[in-house]
Length: 397
Image 1: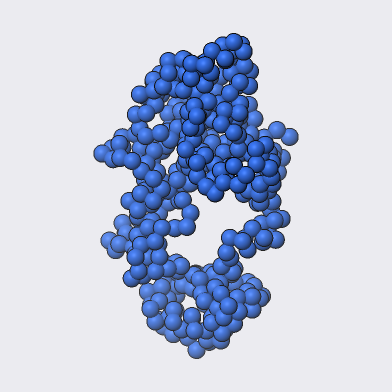
Image 2: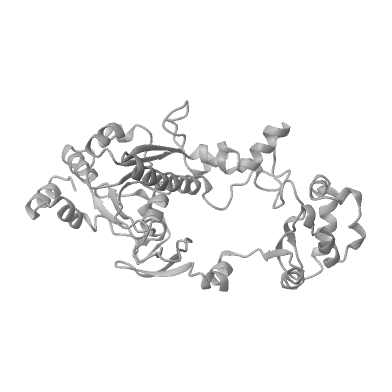
């Protein structure tokens, strides 16, 4: 069976994380992703460690399955080659600083003249307009400015950055959604369009619960540790040998009595201060020490056995090594092997999308810089060996 996006071609002018993450997903789904990189340097992510056998594992984790074409877009010939490729492409993706594509002479107004059906996706820290559009931004900056760092961590402690690059990755995911929707709309209208993704916008969208609580009550959310802002118990607890996450149901199926019975604290079931999930959250300063003391009496595995027997959702707080070895992760093939021509075999994270008919799997490692330049220029543009040699000599490729 073919992959869902087979026949779709992407010109990938992205670097580091947010853009490469989006185009990687498109590639996993079957699109042909041609990564356009600068001569000699390429994507600066290639320099990020750790390096194993000379291969940047950072770059590998974001650029698997892609082709690499070296092209100097600052040169007239490089720009000409790119616009010829545009005519045979479906999607152009960039996460350069706003205005960069225009300075290179390949802004949307130019590109759409060469291919009116092109989906032209741009991702930047603050979007293509607004007072911040020219400000430089990285993941930690937009996480800070978007508010997520302000609600992460323990109450009364300094702000904490979440352990994943949520600023970059969330923007990459939203951009992928936007591209797929634009491809669907093009089937109806026959027209392409430009997509403008702001990393900061995506942070605000990600924090919908925090914002709706603030907008409804006027109270500014703060860090809550691991617990839920409106329902308790729904958090991580210490155990005798580690930590466990427990999430009870609320409403008509409130599992509070069951939870209390399991931890041996039936005396607090009918306490008016803890009658509902919302009240328990409001009185958490009183309740949490009681629950922590009870939960420390048994090991994580003992609690999991008891909670699961009562259908109370729970799970251990795993370290990354334990996640990689988890039988559920293995059965879902979330860690796979790829062979890199320069560095041998690597274990990497698989795409999580599972289809019933069309596959979505990792088949190829990340490319070396310029590995596919000649193949693409000969195959798509029918350039001769002589023409390619001349461009290489003049620094175009």
